[in-house]
Image 1 (tube, rainbow, N blue to C red):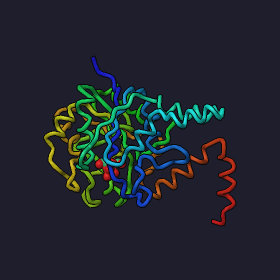
Image 2 (tube, rainbow, N blue to C red; image 1 turned 90 degrees about the vertical axis):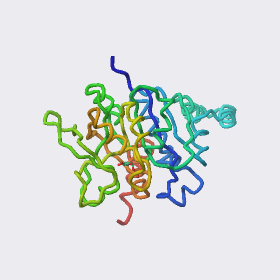
Image 3 (cartoon, helix red, strand yellow; image 1 turned 45 degrees about the vertical axis):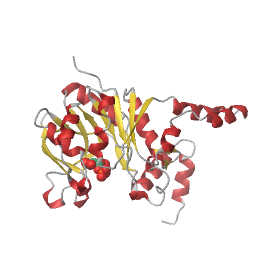
Image 4 (cartoon, rainbow, N blue to C red; image 1 turned 180 degrees about the vertical axis):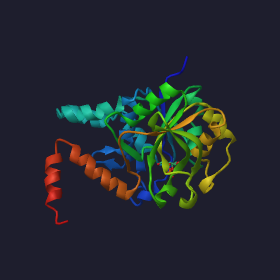
Length: 291
Ligand code: G1P
């Protein structure tokens, strides 16, 4: 019988240099989008998609992340004493969101290496990978959409987006063809990490959500260092293609690159506008700006 996708791996060992100076001391995963650290959006998406176990791959200086998802006795006791019930609820909820394990990635050897660090904890079952920088606003959680495709097709599923122009060089890019019966699905025949625009095999860029079969671990173990001198997840998945099907999936939703300063500004405006408590006020404020 096919196995359920129960575990999500969150690679979070990166240095976040795209967001300096904010990320000199604060992990990029802890940067707030409106009032929540970006990693919490990813964790909530995973839980809403049926994930039971979260594995954070962390590194030096990421302690704030562990504290965020843990119980804060001082904070909770103070809020309780002061009768601040709503805030107490917010604080408590975070620590009870999920079963979380932490693995430390000792050296920043790449995304493929980070995922490989989760091998023992994941075991022999399909799993998800979420890159918290990619915040996705969707009616049905993006990962849930992907798990549905995995359950139906029993092959690895990569979230994809069409990227026009030279910007494609910042992504893993798929080769292949659209499924004639389902325009959301792209049947992969190859993929390349951060190709030059001129040689990119398509406009289908990989976005930070993956559902992978456990065979990818064996393949990552055999994969050499690739683009940027790092062990690339894309290269490990490319190896999978020799054994099984891999699908690109155009999800329904809007993706923001919150690990990038401009992307974070866009996400902040759009997420704030959706918040009932200040959406109206914020809209009025934006309209009043001399743009
Ligand atoms: C990583 C992956 C890349 C993917 C991207 C999505 O790159 O290596 O294939 O397209 O995430 O955000 P990074 O942005 O970490 O350099």
